[in-house]
Image (cartoon, rainbow, N blue to C red; front, side):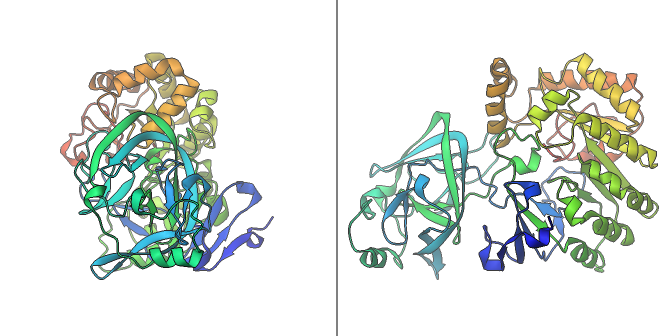
Length: 516
């Protein structure tokens, strides 16, 4: 069925999620449950933050996952203030409902109408916030509320990375449950609406936080997206959460992290070519596949990569591609031509050789045989192909025998080098993976908690063991030659790659923010 006949929304204002430059939204039977939002992008090059330890400064992402990127923040029993002045349980709120949000009016923030454009939910570790007036709110640690001194998260993420977090004695902005309109009030709708909208948002001593408690368990949580980017939850101002982290590192679809709203930059090649032709462009390395795989199934329809490859090569810009997708074979002739003009690095992600386990961990991704065939095709085309054997899963894909089998298969396929790294469980990814592990391999939960008890990375002892095992396997299978800096392993995942010697021991953490 032709996609041209599958448009479900037209125009910028009709998107399921608020998008600038929206051309149309598309659904197709080939991608059941997925909506593609085709946009006209204004930029293609993305600058990597200066504090990043990645060995490149620029990326291009022709598609993006769910723009909500939410961690599913509030209890379904949270009361949401509707624009008519009544309150509704969050679990009963629907897309299209009109709630109360806020917007800045000079130096003040006022209550305004705000339309719900999306809603979704899952299970996350929960926290309870208690206010002096008795109001309680159950939310995830990544949710943000408006305090006197700005937006603050509920809790600091594991590992302690700095971000403004709520503390006891902070006062939240809003009015609390005691001052909000009654649930199921019988008052006339117009009078209720008039009493709410237009009012200034403030705080009182009653909204001072008296406790923030980690409940020690995961609970069903829900979030919504609104046109103002916020809403009133249990009488305080709550921000839409756009911080879901599964898209940065996980192709490990352990639950509901499969993306249902895909943003497609249909003009990305044209915009990229214009940016690369600017006199200010210094032809720095550009990485593709570091956030989302550029050869996802949708690339078969949109065919964005050929234009991107041509634009990079024609401008003299070196680039790298990291993928799990055999669709890259289609572009091998283009990559061969590009390699005559600029340095081109290609890497394939493959760490699990057991097809049954691989489909449990990465449902919807190509199986190991398809990726081995992709490696062979790349090397047969005269291009070197590195392999990122990440993430190695403790007690599931590690062990000297499994690591040796993996390296043997990669050597047989013609891979030029193998970079090995243990599973990395940042907040967001951690909860999803541990929930999956509890369902599939409950006997391993305690062991994982032990070796990941110190943060996102596996324990130092485990990483050193894995480094030794992988180094020995590389030597046995001929992967001991010098390696391209782009895919080189690190001995310290938190230090810049430039500070580490070429002979650094095997990786303690991922060489770049790949697909995990």
